[in-house]
Length: 260
Image (cartoon, rainbow, N blue to C red; front, side, top):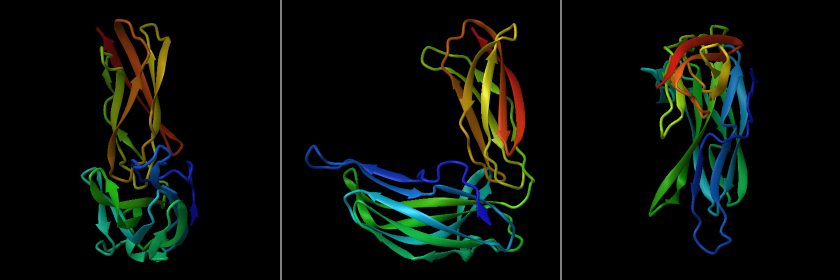
């Protein structure tokens, strides 16, 4: 099984920032985990080995315990399930080396995780969790920090998304024009739809464009993608066209934008 990293692998899935106290030269405090997302392709029975890097840019030494959880979708939203609860648990196969991690201040450490896809697996994701055991300052309290890297698995070419109507909101004194649609992953595999909206005047001439941010959707997951158009729009009726691209395919929606 091989990893297809479609974006910078060193982006952090989770990050904690807090204000450093002390003299003016105090530095920002942050903890990052990379890769944030590991998209994989393969088939049941295969294993994947991935090195995860935790960067501790804080002034505190930190300790973590490693565990994995399955990620499933219920009622359109992600749910994290403890390893072994599902009969086809991916998380139950997780092997971490080491299982406990200590990271000094202003330093980094790595963990190797091995995951194996069980036969007949139905869900498509698991998360490797770094559960903090060192209290860190959070305002006037202390908190435990947890970070995670998401593993997604594509096992077939059965990809599909369904979209609701393209909703258009005209600009106001305090908000830009906004276009949005609810997308549902009604296929069997993870998808990452991204899109672009264009606004046309009554004569079909291009007025402007606005991008939809990409969002990863697991099978059954739903989300609303929104594009804000910051340009000026005079009174009138415009035609809005939104195109969403995913896995080499495209879905186009149209709607009207009426500016009073």
